[in-house]
Every structure is written in C-alpha cells, then in structure tokens.
View 1 (cartoon, helix red, strand yellow):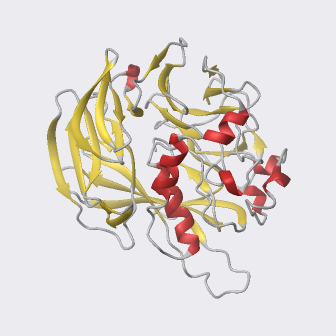
View 2 (tube, rainbow, N blue to C red):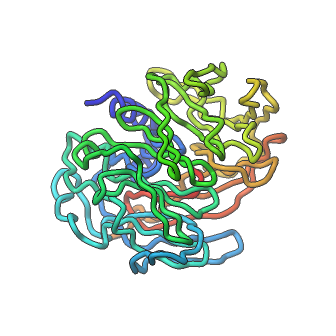
View 3 (cartoon, helix red, strand yellow):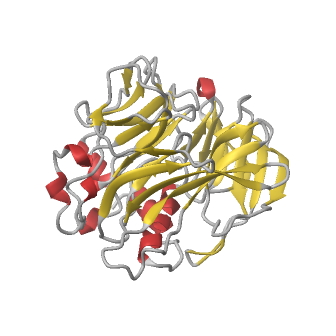
Length: 383
C-alpha cells in the first residue's frame, strides 16, 4: 500500500466511535481533509438512495435526481456534485463491479439554478472495488469556489481535466495517470478559486497551470493544500500537517499546524485555519474550536477567535472559501437518527454550511445539503 493510501487510512481511523451511518460520513470527511475532493471512506457496506435535495434556511428546495448529460456549453455555475450508486444496495466486498458502465453511477452536477446533469466523462465509482482497496470508492472531483469550473479524472484521456461550464472548454494535464493507478493509489485535486490552477496529489504533488500546461513540482514530503489566483501563493503541508509556503522551488515553514485550511483571501495573503484539535493514539479527543487567520507572506497571525453561537451537533467542520471579507464557509455533516428502528428506514445524510466570523468566532448557518442514503459523497464548491 502506498504512503499516500496509508495516510488516508490513518486519518479515516481517527473518527470517534458512533453509529455506523454517522461513522461512514465522519470517516470520509476525516480523511478527505476539506480540499480532498471525492473518494469516500467506505466504513460500512450499505444501501444508497438516489435523491439529493438542497434546502436553504429560507426553505427553497432543489432536486438533483434528473440525469441528463451535461451540455457542451452554456451551463450555469455548479451548486454541488454527487454520486449515489444508482440508489441500489451496495457492498464493496461483493457487488461494486455490477455498476460498471451504468449511467446512474456517474457523477451528477447540480447547478445554482437547479439544473441536474450526468458527467459521463468524469470517473466516479471504482468498479474494481475489493476489501483490499475499500478506502478508494470514487474518482476525485472538485469545484472551483465560484462554481464556474470543475476538475475531475478523465478515464478516456487518462489525465486530469478542468472544464469551464459556461464556454465548454476542457483543459487536460500533461501527466498521464492510468485507471489502474487511480484505483490502486487514489488522487486528490485542489483548484485555485478561479479554477485555472490545479493542485495534484497522487504519487507526487504538483501544480498545473491548466491554460498553459506548465507543471510545477512540489518538493518531496510536501503536498498542495491551497492555491491562490494566478497560481500564487501555494500553501502546502507535510505528513504531520505542518503548513508551509511554496515558492521559487522551496518551502518556507509557516510554523503552524492544521488539517483544515481555507482558500486564500481575494488578495492572496490571508489564510484561515481551524485549530484546537487534540489527538492521542490516533484518536481525536478534542475537536477544533478556534478559527485563526494568518498572513502567509509574513507568517504573522492576524486574528484568533474561539467559536461562539455553536449550533447543536456542530463538531466536525471542513473549511472552504471566503463568504465575505470577514467570514469563511465551513461545512459539517448532518446527523439524522430519526430513521433508526423503522422498517426499511434510510437516514438523511449530507452537509450543512455555516459562515464563521474570523474576528468574533460567531457561527451562523447558511444552508443544508441533504440526501437519503446510507453512504455517499457530495462535493461543494471551494472545499
């Protein structure tokens, strides 16, 4: 097993002991580490349903059940993407191969205006799934924070791709990666906020300017975490989640440690990260409770605030982009136990998004993204 896979499995193992459905989502979120785009930690082999709903606090609802093919161009910005194993019972030890070639197993993208489309060009489910590689159930996909571009693995081209939804242009990475390699080792994709620069983490780590094809290799032992517009700054971390700033072929340590780092602010200088987590013997004994901002160009801490107005059941946030100059967006898994004890009951899963004020730590809810399922994956812009 590769070092990358070992790392992912270790992070997944840090989820606390909870009910199986909740553990499946929490485990996946742990090793996805915010920018970790699409593979799901399959900690339980269970059934998955087909409907995804987005519900805002104002009550508006969008359904992602329709599965038309993504048009060649003229697509509105993405609101989210998901896949759901066709709504059928899924057991990674027995029947993953039966999903091969099925349209209903493809990634589906839902736009901000409610359109829903299949993405046949984007590898979704690894149909070779067996117990030995159960940590990698889905191909990677990530969405730029403005929703205008989406990155994925193109099985046809055996390369990673970035697609502009409005004009339909598709850029491919110079690197060729076989499906066999993807199934064996997995990959992580990180997009700059404008969707031009793609960070890769597979066997090595690099940053690709998708419009010119220029590849910049990251020094061994470091991996891309966030990329600023224009390809700079590039925030990286090592295998102990120590943060650094990459430039001119070298990494300058930032003397900060966090698994949860935001996108860079509009000026490319400010990074927000979540702090307060305590891990003992690979078990999280205290989760994050603080938000910190850092000037990555100087290493200076700009603000630090404990969470306030914490919502009920809030405890495993991932951090995304900036909601305003003083707020960043985080998401947390939803926990539904109302299905328990019901015949043929299926839990409601998904994410809720929140804005955290970096100066006060105040948390306010933005929206809920839910789907009826036992296990699954849902990707939001900028995470």
